[in-house]
Image (cartoon, rainbow, N blue to C red; front, side, top):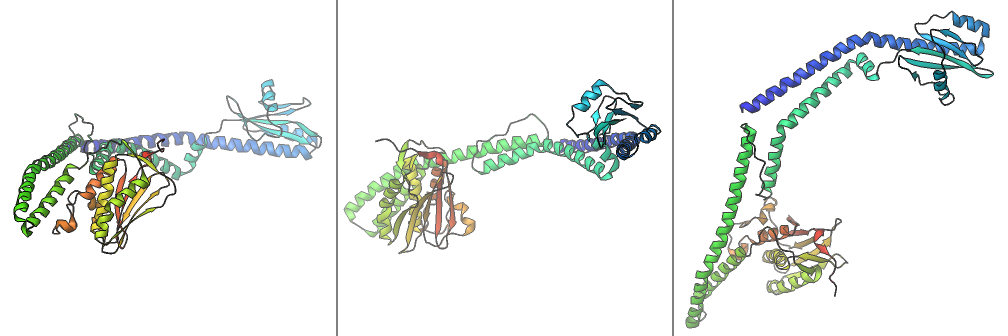
Amino acid sequence: MNRLFLRIFIAFWLTTLITLVAGQQLSHLLQREGPRVNQVREQHEAARRFLHRAARRYRWDDQVEWLQWLDRKDQPFEWMLRRLDGADLSHGLSWSPELETRINSRPPGNFRKPIPLNDGVLIIKPLVSKNGLDGYLVAKVKHPHPLVVEWLYEHLWLRLLLALLATGAVSYWMVRRYTQPIRQLREATQVLASGDLSLRLRDTDGKDDLSALRRDFNDMAARLDEARQRQRTLIHDISHELRTPLARIQAALALAERREGEAEELSHIRRECDALNALIAQLLDEPEQSEELNDTIALQPFLQRLVEQNQLEAESLQLCLRLRDTSASEIWLQVAASPLHSAIENVLRNAIRHSPTGETIDLSWDELSNGDLQLEIRDRGPGVPEEALDKLFQPFFRLDDSRSRNSGGFGLGLAICRRIVESHGGSVIAHNCKPGLAVRLRLPAALRVTPPSE
């Protein structure tokens, strides 16, 4: 805490110091340059008024009277009259070949922009009579100050805005620098929450609170990853160990059925053994984070076979399975066929288990605008509460923990489905359709391949 407080304290006073120093220097600059700004501006305005008035009188006055009037003018700047016939009139300014070259290089009639020199600028005014161009009036004035300096001198709000921008920039840089570890930690927690427990932050030897927090995060992520690995190993080990006594129970049950026949008690034991065997199979079949995508399948026949394999179970419950093809093109995919078959079948069997008698279960697929494929399985059952939609894909989650396995299952089917689809680079979501529940499986366009040759 002390180090973080010290950083914030130093940053605050450093920003204040920079603002004070910058404000003092700007005030000193404006106090020094202010009178010069006014002087230069007045000189430029006087030169333009003088040239404009002289050019207008030249057009209408008598030439002798005009020259006498012009010669009497005393101006706070240097100027000269350059006539094409060579009759020049100079007041501190002389004509040169270089100046003539620069004037003649201008486009005809374009004399509004001054000509810059090392020690000032020249303002040019052409002398035009009824006969055309007769010469030029040239005035030399000081270099104008930059427009920003003039604005800062004239407008207080601009100085305040500049101070606000300067302090804002310094404060933003310091905040970004000091909060970068916090942003990295926030992004890391989001990755951790998404299920990737392999992420680790770059460790530092700092003794401040943020460095300690980074190390604590790495320790937490490592322990969570280790706990998940232990949980997975424990589940698989227990599942394997349960297979041996379960096999012995089933063998003894088979002998008892031969001796006693189809007794009610033995049938009940058989059902419980089958349920336990199904649970062990699901635990052992839970996929890893990645699958080997070595199988090339045609999507429509693949889904058709899946529907046919589950049609008998659906008909026994007086349900109708319907496959709808909303795309006219033939789609081929590079996938892990067996796991993907299990993923879709888990969703389909879940829909069969929760559909009322006499209803229809729709399995459809479509191509999205970005090339992804979307499979949707929709039943017309009661649906689920909105707050439980995201939890449907968690292992062992059931809406009602008191329900029997016959109605609620083990809570592993949808979790296995999500892991398989995510291992293909896709995603799974569920939403209520009122009536019913729709589960959408999205497969990325990267899985699409060209049809294999015959």
